[in-house]
Length: 108
Image (tube, rainbow, N blue to C red; front, side, top):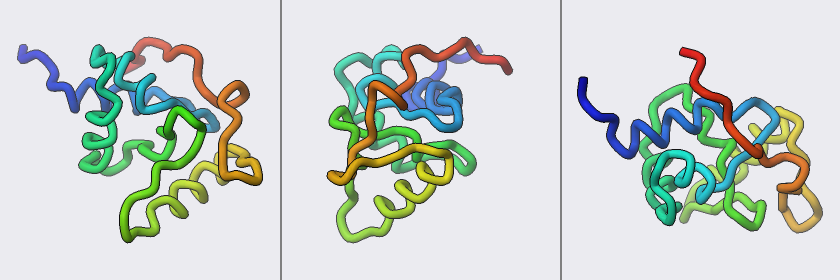
């Protein structure tokens, strides 16, 4: 059996972020065994497979990381709000309230 690629490990972590919760890019990197490679998580999510809850990953300040010339930030916010995630007036998520603290092992 082949060893999972970095992107496969990132996708496995993101799949386990529960509805109504968020994780930071750095947190996903660490859980995927890629500590210090938060940007790689962003690159992976830019190429994520259909059905992956990419919208549940935000930056360490609790904000959505904007993409140049796109409506992805608005889409991400709408998807998060539909799951009950709240934003303050500065567009930040309260990480103490909504960030996952650990991810349970894979169930599949």
